[in-house]
Length: 244
Ligand code: PGA
Image (cartoon, rainbow, N blue to C red; front, side):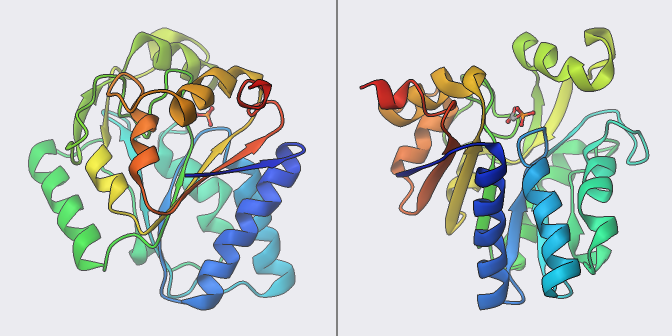
């Protein structure tokens, strides 16, 4: 695993957007794994800018998002469908038929999850997976304790995650209790992974993921076993790592 530290959030966001841009330039049919949350917002803003100013072409790109809340309709303002439309899809020339996000309203989530896995496979697998990290070390919504061989499925959200995400919902009681997330095994099959972390409140999780034992208690620690994974951090998120 490589660790790359940028001065601040803006520079981290520009760097990851460059990596995405280079991936698409090298392969216009690239399959991207996308993340939501606060951390990748700057990356998506950069990608929109690169589309407008530099002609970055999303026409043939395929995307798979990591996760979605169970029970939220795509039109719900806090759904990850809405997030992706607002932050990226509505502002670039991507073909919406090539964008995939788990369906939080799927009547048969188990069958839906298996079909999502098959679709990733039949699309050729993920070329570049973007990830955030939870303060508890989660990846997607693979909370501590998630098996390393997990696949796309319905999961319960931890209290910590619900509390962290209540900033988007106004109150914790409005945060859904479950989500559909791709699994840790699914993530590990991506050919290249870039994990983003910004801010002091991610520093401990980053340190555990990079330097701690590979353990289901810190799901992101599994990335130590990936052949092409970069942790792209700002100085604050790297601060405990760089202490020793
Ligand atoms: P954040 O979430 O980017 O909103 O901090 C990241 C995550 O929970 O994976």
